Length: 108
Length: 128
Image (cartoon, rainbow over all chains, first blue to last red):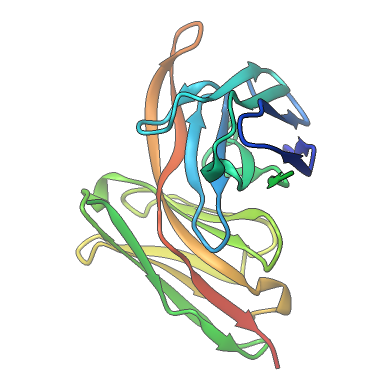
């Protein structure tokens, strides 16, 4: 099974900050990596698929990069509505999928 | 607009059964594979099961295989999750999600899969 490890598990940041979240796969997954945002009490929302392709309607301040085992989600300038938990998810073994443990972005 | 609405959650004793439903609207349901994903209280997301668009292929996470059954009725635009022999660790919010694919060029064109439409979830609590 492919394990997905996110770091950090939580971070504190301010509006306007640049934020970077890392996701590491236990084996190479090429670019079969998706990112989701989840706000409390809500369903997850797809941000990025195929490691770097922005889902339609997602603001351009979100970007993804990486391939193989190491991936990054970057928020170039944090907005108030971006405080949420972010999950990576591998689709290399689709349709059997694995999520990372999540990174909670909190207000500093 | 595209919508998924889960129902059927509730409080159930360990060892009992429950069936969840997910009603789809706003898209051609029989063209898409579908997933169930769950989230235990205060925990992260866990993929549970997948069914292909025609119902011919099904996949499960190890922890539910043999206890849960995913199915669909394309004539009713509805996805199901039959959950038997429920355990306390099955307590979670259960989401259904649509499986989407896109062609992406990465040294050649390949399909990439992702969950692009989600329901709001239904809560299952397993407790005596």
